[in-house]
Amino acid sequence: MTIGFAHAELIAVLAAATGGEPRVMTIRSGDALPSGPFEMGHRTLQSGLREWVQEQTAHPVGYLEQLYTFADRDRNNEILGGRTISISYLGLVHEQAAPGAGRAGWHGWYEYFPWEDRRAGSPPILDELAAHLTAWADTEPRRREDRLRRAIFAFGLGDSRWNEDLVLQRYELLYEAGLVAEAGASAQINPGRAMFADHRRILATGIARLRAKIKYRPVVFELMPDSFTLLSLQRTVEALAGLTLHKQNFRRLVEQQELVEETGETQSETGGRPAKLFRYRHAVLEERALAGSKLPLSRN
Image (cartoon, rainbow, N blue to C red; front, side, top):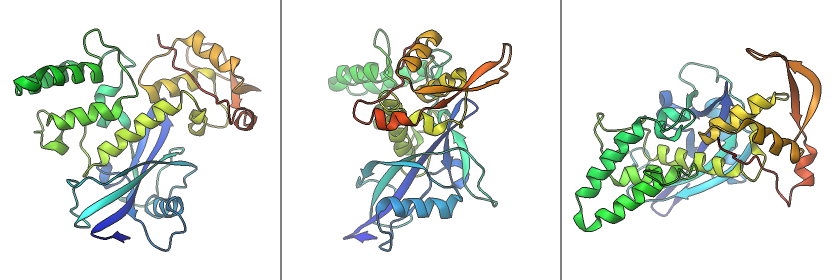
């Protein structure tokens, strides 16, 4: 669809959690998110996106919500020409291979944002980023303090607390500082894998939305199998948040909110006795539609 001199396209951030790792569906061998033009024949934007993703990836979409509309003048418009209005969506799915050569593939979140994974502590790349951001701040003496303050806040440097929700702000700051390939950084400087046009920015928006949402809505269960252990549930939440959680506090919070129920079956886990299997209580959706259910991040 063309709006004046602008083109409207739909872009999907389709997230999954496989083997305790957050994953995103991509095309172009991992360089882009599934996307396509909005057609006038589509009844709604969501139906248009579902049809496009199904056609492009052979993958059905379950949970879906709109993320954001991007319409910056300086977007890369090499395909359509003119300004492009990108309407992005976040979808939660179970990973499965798309049939056919050259079809959609899955890649880990942290391949694109290695500084966002703090499950093993502060990643070494943060030291490199801090040095580059300090050098960037020094290039503008009048703005130095402001730039340093923003870097410290966004990346939790020094005594500042790391905020896992600031995924987009961190990427935008790196972009402003010219430290990512999308902003012209060299391969030697660019941290993380680059993506086509502003797709990494859109992916950052999706990650930030999901990290925030798991704190007040039980959407993580959209990513879980029908039955699971509490350990696998915790590992999934940790993977999404990029943090490690206190085991006993996490389990107590899950049980207090009555989010799950036992299936009566067990599963053997490595190095320990068989663990109970649980399933999500679907009645929670109705019971807590107004009050809200959450899986709070009780950090170690």
